[in-house]
Image (tube, rainbow, N blue to C red; front, side, top):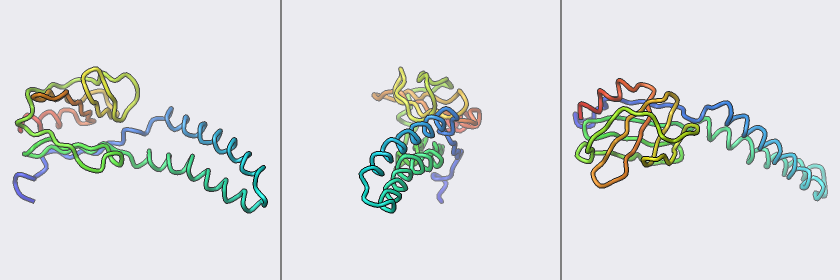
Length: 162
């Protein structure tokens, strides 16, 4: 790793571990599974066929969404050549804010009012994590981007060094 690639700050946060979201998934997954499972079971020729369909349905409506939310995280890295962030696994490639693109930045709270994750706020796209603060980057010719952090002071110091 060269000096220009050396990480000044690296943070990974789990933004989607909210009790209300998990409850919503359990209820909606259960209702969907029972409703569709009843239709499938009634239309199946054998108990084995019905069991296979219902197992697939549980996998699709409960297990996959839970697993997806469990591994979801905001990855944030500040290097000497910019601020890198991505919302994994929804964004597979990192986005970068180059130091030359930053007009100004400020420690701020998100304007998006609900939950955590990627949101469209009053001032552009917001990557919201647990904790209320982050940095809003005002960029030359682009909409602002807000990136939340659970270690806001370390994040602010790292961005000031760019």
